[in-house]
Structures are given as structure tokens and as C-alpha cells.
Length: 246
Image 1 (cartoon, one colour):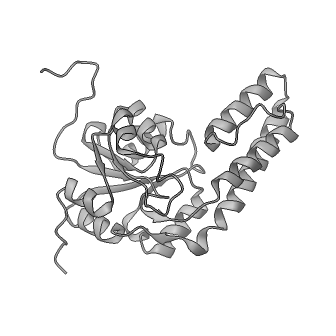
Image 2 (cartoon, one colour):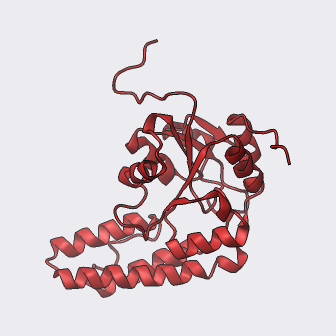
């Protein structure tokens, strides 16, 4: 059956692969519920009506809803700036508490080494802060693989905005139709789909709190071209399962 014009067209072979960080390449056990609760507390302190925001929503959705309510309520720009600065400082602080327990996900070093040996250009697209991302990469020994990195601290939109992925691919010199985004969350699938990029999902590690909700069926429904159980299986999907020569 011919491909419809409305569907993305992908070229082979792949040239660049962009990875999510937390959950995909490293395991940090972030206290996301506490982060969400703190964002809501700060938003309500700046004028959002209590009860309007849900701790069940991801942080970027909570922030978007808070911004919209503050704007429509006539909050001055200064209040919006203070809200942004305060919630970001608090989230950054809670995030950094996870560094001591951050470890590489099993298979990450082997996968990235094989991909680099085969000549793939590698990038990192994360909703973590720049500080956390760089320190986590250093702590886990993954920093040599990532010259190209965009975080929530980077100028411009953050994931899942498609512009975040497109800007990173431009820095990497990788055409969209020869790129792949790999992640373990539906936010990653949303980003890839909106950018019209190819997406491969990796199921969350059993130790992660999202393991029960991020299922193969959900990823396929969200547009994943393939779903791997773990990073060694992803290496087989990418045909780099054999370790490179020493």
C-alpha cells in the first residue's frame, strides 16, 4: 500500500540518534510526585485557585495550566516571571537530590559505545536541567558520548515541543528523515510525533515508577515504530548488538 503524503517519510540508513536521559539511559529514582506538588504549591501562592491543578499531571502540563490561569486572571508579567523562577529553582533543587543514587541503565555503556563505533551521531534531549544532565552523565561515565545536548535549561522550547528536537538535530547536522528519537515515556513519543520524526520506545526499567503504565501497546498507539524491552534489545533493533572490537 503506498504511503500517504500525510505520513512522515524516513530515509535509510539512520545518521543520528537522539536519546532521552532519565529512565532511558540512567536510573535516578526522581521524586516526581514531590516536584509536581511543589510546582502546584508555588502556583497557588502566585494566584492559581487551589484545586485547579492536579498532581497526577506531568510537570510541564501543570506549568502550562498555571501560566494560562495566571494570564487570563490578569496577573502582571512580573508575577509570571517570579512564578517561573521560583518553581524552576525548587524543581532543580529536588532533582539534584537524586544525583547520589543515579546509575547507568544496564546496557547503556555498551549500546552507546557500539553506536559511536558504527559512526552514528548521538544527541541527548532531556527535560532535566543542564546541571543535572551533565553531572548525571559524568557520574555514570556516559559524558564522552554526548557533545550535543538540549535540556530544559537550553534557550527555546523544551521537550515535548517539536522545536526542541528540531533545534538539536540542526546542531547535530542530521536531517529529520534520517534521525531517530529513543525514549521511555509518552512525552518522548509526543515530541517525535509532533516533529514527524521516527521514534523507538524502550520500556521503563522495572525499578521505575512508570513501569506499570508505559506499555508496549501504549507506545505503539502513540506512534512508536518499534518497542524494546530494554537497551540490549534496542541494540538488536539497531543492529549493533555485537560489541565493537576492543
